[in-house]
Image (cartoon, rainbow, N blue to C red):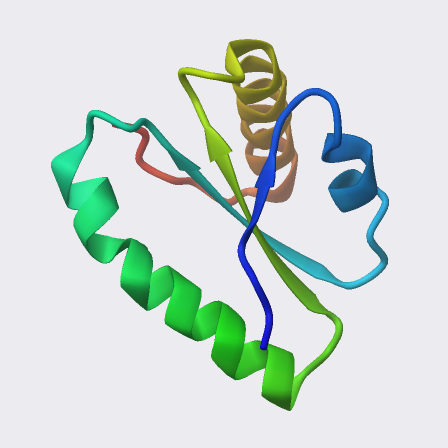
Length: 90
């Protein structure tokens, strides 16, 4: 069974240098809908651990890791502008 690993500034490099697909969930503790949909995210992590081992699931608490959240958010914006992709940020 795969676990959803909690990442922060201290251990994120393990996730960042992972060679497979990385699925990262950014969330705050105070967001009720975020907490309600977490079981689905955890179920996906378990399912893909059995089906495809090169997918890693992680989570980052935006309130506990504001620097990491800011840095990854900036990287996401740059990647999207270069690739022609777009996403809606809330």
